[in-house]
Image (cartoon, rainbow, N blue to C red; front, top):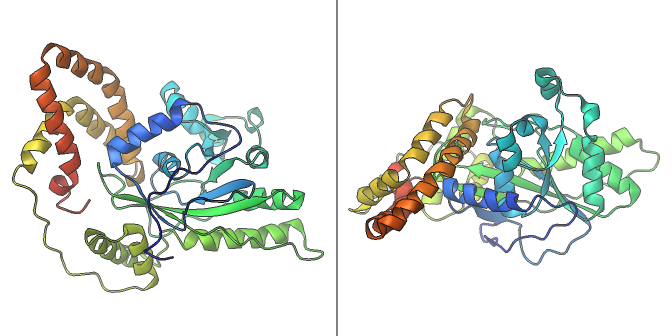
Length: 362
């Protein structure tokens, strides 16, 4: 995959069952505020000729927020959503998708699988209509140096549809966060070429064919995802990707290259200089958004792992923002010039935050 691949293309059209209308808008707002611009790299080019349904198999690095990141690449894509995410009214307002009951959901909450459609059946129905469907084959999210074992649900869906003669495209997607738990951190999505699915051999059983499809999907996903032999190799790959990204290269492509061609960690890099007034504008942003930032920081402290910190921060900050934003607008109405000046200062502070708070490594 070349670093010259096009980036930030136009949205990809989706068919099938639609998300509730406000979900893409909310995802774009929260994702944009928390992370900023998400760069898309790899084999993602426009126009993309549709060949029926499109099954996106994605790495799972940063909890439920991964769904919002996928929506940046494939607007309107449907996904299989754990029933755990839909237990609270706020989360039901924030997320949408085809509900599934995992083993740990059944153990924790006693949720009956019979109460929901079988995930393979529901996924096939979405793809038969020509829609997009995203699946996280790891089944759960973890910030590690290699993926969790891939489940065979995506292969089962693909095998079922191919057996029916339904046209299907399987696209691997690697999600790359430079720091999954850091506000305004760099995020990139690496889109792989569609998977070459093996045809069924004569007299081959469903199980054996499905196993070969699964192997093809796993290999394609490994090629665009974090997949290092050990923690030390992952740390070295991250360090090299950070250095190359600071020079203007793609962080995701640099990380994949570094893990495929291991090297010793790079020497420490000099800190990037910030503008003299950077601290002033960042202070303006902190002042304007203080209740939201404090709520997010408090909520993030309740996360049980690094890959869920951003989710907790976004949820906690959103709860306070719903109250604080109308208050700010009301104050701006009564004291327009001071507040408008603070709004402008805060916007610049949000933009410069990575340079100041991340020591030049967003």
